[in-house]
Image 1 (cartoon, helix red, strand yellow):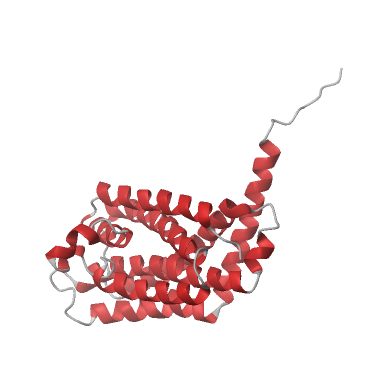
Image 2: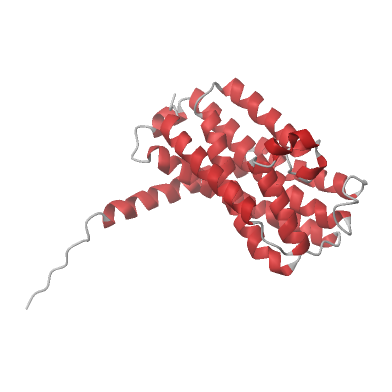
Length: 257
């Protein structure tokens, strides 16, 4: 008696696509780690922000201790630095030097490229969480245990949303414009976008705008999770909405050259 097996239609294609995404994610991760400028954005600047917030009175009314409010904000800053600014700039100049045009000839596709970059961002973000979280613990940080799972979910959603936004900009404008836009946005979001400081700290007339930004959703929700252990349903929904909208736009309008 002989038996025969038949592959499930589409299974081999799905496995092949997944392998390509994994390889692209590995390539993107190594490229980010080996880039000195990226490491400055990923590690040095967030550490400087952490020390600056802890040793000043900027966060004295947000939590019982400055460190408890500083770490969630700096983790949110890490997401924006790595997923939005870092990936946006790197992708913009990859377009200029023909790397993206080369990738357009492979089966990776726009969707595979975005997934690969999200994987790289999550890998680097994991390193940032270890560095910032470890430094915070040495400085006396005590996160609410019940909020840690929510914080992990928020970091993943934030990484997805800001990677999609960074790719949308990098894939539709010139590299010089990408450099200017992402750096300016980084400064504005860090200062008044709800990243390092609660969205309630900005003037009231800006609240309708700030409250729907992914930066405020990420920063405010991380503070709520890690300070009081509470989950922010609206914040999660806003990040999810930005992920879907920006992801669709990036896959639809991304230009390879």
